[in-house]
Length: 501
Image 1: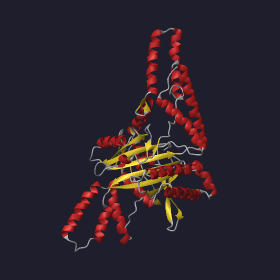
Image 2: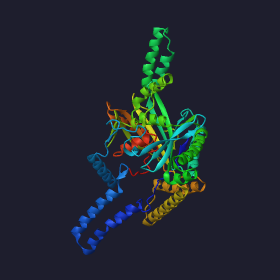
Image 3: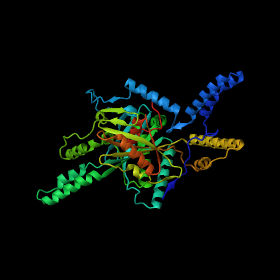
Image 4: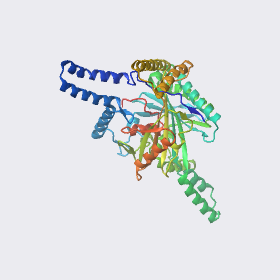
């Protein structure tokens, strides 16, 4: 079994586990207490000390992944957005105000997305979709991949594919252009659209009635238990890096597309080689619109597949989805779930276990429990520049040394977890010296069901599946809309960067 455990905390508190801003806040707020002690106002000392202790709890003690101060700020922003109506989304098409059908109309963090058609490439002259996020100032391209899976792979094969993923991240980092790599997998209930089309095209009128009935019964039974897997890989390039290279390639959209096409070739070679992907298809604008539409409304796929099949015999059929209709007609974020069209979704992030992450251990997260349930999982790999990685590694080593010396002088014994974190911090510098890339990975899992069912129950099942896989779930309350967009919509959006939308 391939297990990777050589990861460490992003930041290690150098003063008994406290970070710099936490220590500074506590030190500044303790000054009134010492002033009261100096003036010997003892009733005031007690009041100020009690207030300082309460503030220390709010700043230091985390509650479900955030400090109490963070929860207060997030709750205030959510309340303001709800009262002012900023968080509620209604599409222009639903209101009859859609003028340009080629303009994307998406909710929340996806509002700044614009889709461009790249130059023709390859023998088929396909035009890959170029994703521009004006709010985050990034450019991205997405491909769909077909992978045989690792369920039946032996330990050596899993280790090779794990090394292939590490090589892919190193290749992306060495380009000095790719800022983030996103891998998104959606396990969708099988709607039987392809099978129904095949049966209608190949069933003979002279078939025995009993055989026809048995075939129909089997199809109806198996369709409820069958699932279909969709996998997407997205590379994200910030405008600050792409702009310089684009000027040398001709400038404008065409220059940026040329640079992105060269990156697509490097990533595709690594996907087919080290990761054993059997097929890599860079999505065109209609294909990406289909992926986005089925991300918001999984039940719409059957009708779209039927229209695509009918277009082969009748060219007058318009089976493409305009970008003005790719998003939901309405979306409303709730504190603990996200409502879009006739569906509800719950998202949770996944915390890495201390004992290590086994390759393929997240398979239970992608297995639906009930018919009509969809599971999505997105793993983001934000890549740090080499200079930034070296600086952070040096700061982490300094913090580990300072924390160890302070504990030694205070006579506080280091626990096993603290010793393990310090050892991983020292080992990180060795890996950077050997030329490996530094990344801050995170994963978000989402379950989507129809509004006719209780979403809270499916959210608990998702948490149970994450725990069964050996990880710890953390519900992304007050950020369900952004979490859904990151884990279910392959447009290069993640939780690592902020936008000015």
